[in-house]
Length: 66
Length: 66
DNA sequence: CTTTTTAGTAAAGCTAACTTTACATTTGAT
DNA sequence: ATCAAATGTAAAGTTAGCTTTACTAAAAAG
Image (cartoon, each protein chain N blue to C red):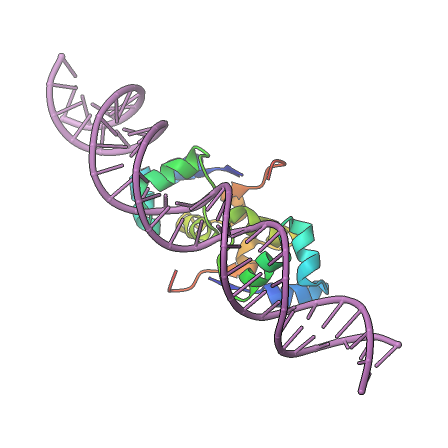
């Protein structure tokens, strides 16, 4: 799964740590998702999307490999 | 997390087994998600939404408890 | 009423998501 | 050039997502 987290954070000018706090996970979790180390749960994905005022699909996109 | 899987399946008139096959998981996984036994991964949530031609948020909704 | 399809549930096992702690590297500000 | 903030990564541990097999119950079709 691809994600546009880095871009969305840049648009909103917030750090990984700030996003983490906003959605209730650790900073490392946000970093790991952002760099593609793993896929978030649907709950976390929805919270992240909501934090940016976007649809989940605008932030997270399926790849052929999924 | 709430979900509208049962309704979406009814609209599309497909069984849990058919949906499972479409998105590449076991029938039990679909059933478990539908009855709220657990939350899907973001990948699976996106695949399910796509299978119904809807946005993830139309099928899966955050609750206060999330 | 009998058969078939669909749905619900359970146990055991495996892998991936997430945590905490901790340290190294990069970037930005002064 | 220095200090602070932000990012990247790692290891160890816990929990949740998902699988397979298997059985029961409900609903639909005949």
